[in-house]
Image (cartoon, rainbow, N blue to C red; front, side, top):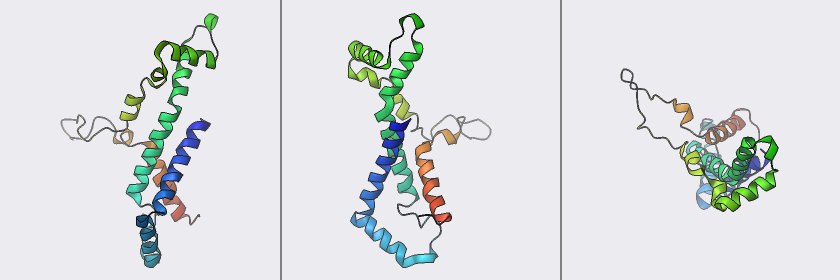
Length: 158
């Protein structure tokens, strides 16, 4: 969805730019220039791997929150019977009339919390591994930015 991508990339860029223009960010960039070729690919990331993951997760959460009302309207449109089918704007107005603006965000909190699973998940008795795959516990937005920034370094793309 286009609005989702605009928010996603826009928020990440704002966070990254703000950090790189902060005293801490400038100090990191200066340290990276001094170290030069001695740094591995992860150490060459402007934000560092942890900050990249955090900023990616924040961008993903902002994107989800900004575009969630569209998803609520889309689901309502899908559930309508063809005989009484309304347009997107009419459906949106009906949702707001019935439940107010908060109705457009119904279910947002569980959607956002889904990515915040902890290590205290149920485990299998024999292997003590989580029953739920850990790949679903980390927001894809965070991972995608980490991979993106890492591949820019590996492929020497600016």
